[in-house]
Length: 406
Image 1 (cartoon, rainbow, N blue to C red):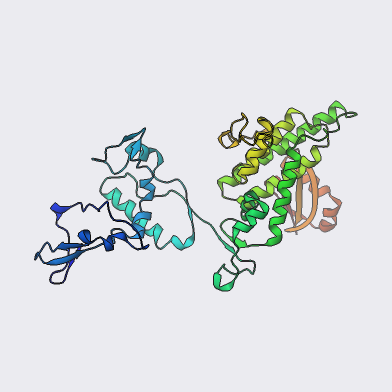
Image 2: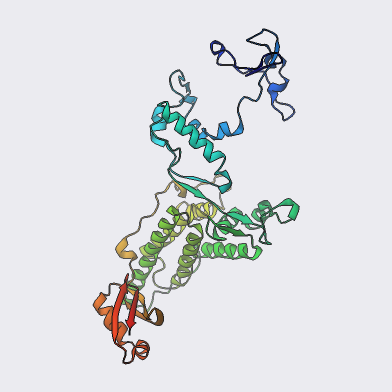
């Protein structure tokens, strides 16, 4: 657009498009450099030929954020050669693979601005036949807000802003990362707690001591083959159950329960390290799985311990960061065996008229008939039934049974 005092706002004639920006506009004041580029700013009015000025705000901020997902698949150089941009706004092969975006994460404050505009752009591109879809993202997940220690939204005016740099310096980046995930559900956020990060730091220290194999090995002498086999079976079960939990939670953005699962797993390994399973293939599987599951959340300590396990000591080679092992971050994600992950025993919760009356240890594959007999035979349940007629027994999902009496 061109602004003329006589004619008002005048569009640049179609035959003069595109308007090419000058390459010698140099930012110096922090403002738009085009405002100070005299030969670009001052032009003749296309209508009357008089003095006029060109619009210097070429694109609104939201213009950029409305199509950056398409710009990501617009490589101007590929294998050292410039791509032709004559007939396509981006690389169609790359766009066919990457677009639309599978997952978008951001704050809820974007809903009425950035997200609204980017959806408009995509619908317009679809209408003119540039893309075959009408939504730019397939899935949206809004993160919560980290509050100050006082439970209020962080604000300089309130003096409750927590600068992460000092905490990273004190505890390390992985402790801060893991704590921010552990505060609460990712879509809810929560207040920063100075004591909470200490707990995460202690967890990482326990991980280090579990993975470090420089100490004494587990006590295998005097353990029967049957007991050793049972220990290995239990270790493999908790390993595969943890892989299953973390794999499912990472897909659902449940980062706080991922950290909880890893803490529980590590606590189990602390005790298992003192038994006959230490040093067995099942132990190696468990330790490798622990590190692989930690890698997305705590990437630095996971890489360090992975290299120490699979590439030799890192500390005595200061000039060589990696010692031969592939980075943990390019290693395949562990897979779980559903059969191994299944528990042998479960806690069967027994209710009478909807109120908890007993908890009974039962086989994981217990049938409805067997669960009914077990529940009705419980002395703790019997006293609540007495001589009342049993109207119905509801067996819900194998872990809950509700006895309805008259």
